[in-house]
Image 1 (cartoon, rainbow, N blue to C red):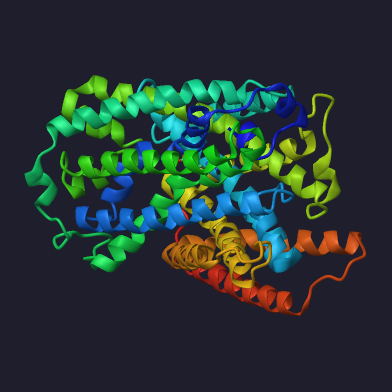
Image 2: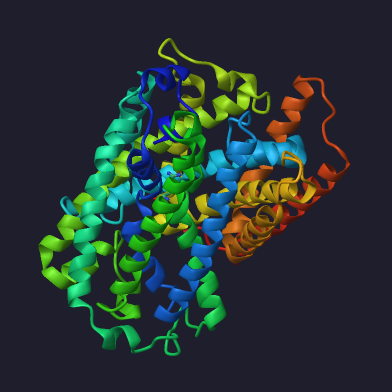
Length: 489
Ligand SMILES: NC(=[NH2+])NCCC[C@H](N)C(=O)O
């Protein structure tokens, strides 16, 4: 996906490949969004929310994500020169420091998400080879490291087929998801679904969560499964019809939303909340096993392996590509722009995969599970989402880049909703958001070093204020972590 959606890995593929029609674009949107997240939805929601809370959570997410998608579509046509997508919008709107931190957060999210993919992949493998357990024990980490460097070698050689492979895998995973949906629809028991609709009897961490908290706690998961939504807009140049891009984004988004809602809501009519919460991830496996017997678990696990393998390849390309684009923009250190003879961003790829390797080892050490990892990966992407939404609002508000007499009301409404949604997500992310401040802090050092190298002024007035706030939050978070008030695993 990365090769197609997020600016091309090389300019050549854009000129040699043929233009994309509507169905290809829809496949692309769905393929870049549906990776690993969907397969764990039953447990992820079962552990925090009742059916009622989940439905409210999906309504909020549907509206918020739709507005965000429209904003990206809008920005990509109004600002065609901003090729880095998400972070370039943040930079254009709010200066170099915010732009840098957005690129940094997006990059972190991309590769940390891959660490979580590795854990999920081996957790799925354990359905066939039990020694892999939850995907974060020693055999899994060794296996994941092998997979990591295989993908690395593949990308270094310049993978042009990634997009093609991903299209096939997209069809396969959608078919598997549909089989699951049909099976749970037939077995759905309304009595199980309504037994504790608002979660009045629910106990989470020894407490009875209020409805508001249940809804809030679904937000990280609903956001995680929609990451990748921003990708579709960046292919503008390769679409046969410009108007197809908007259509594809909306169709893809609604299609994915329908799948997510059906998978998660129907599962709540198969097993009660406490049983769902206790399932091992990928938890769709446990749900289907309950309906059709042991082959159901293996069927889903096989689907996860294919789907995550494709997504892993795609996000590896993209995690390495982003620093390259950012380095060409002069916002990341120049070395990241280095390419090998096959036009792969080799330096960037080595650093990125080196970090993934390091975090795989830390995962073993801290026994961090899939959920902990993707929660932080999701939190890290929220600032880039928030600031690009805010840029959409800023343009509509000031009328910059709007034609004379063009109506700005729609843009303002979309911008307000998406920006409020972005703030809400940051708030709802809670501890994970705090933890991500520890990831943004080292970025500060890189940013200042880079500015010094370029002989530019380090920070402007308001940027100092943001830096001080960031450092305060990071220090506070560190204190909480050391006191054991925030747990990483
Ligand atoms: N490796 C990553 N950074 N993945 C982010 C994309 C997550 C994707 N929406 C999923 O559900 O799996």
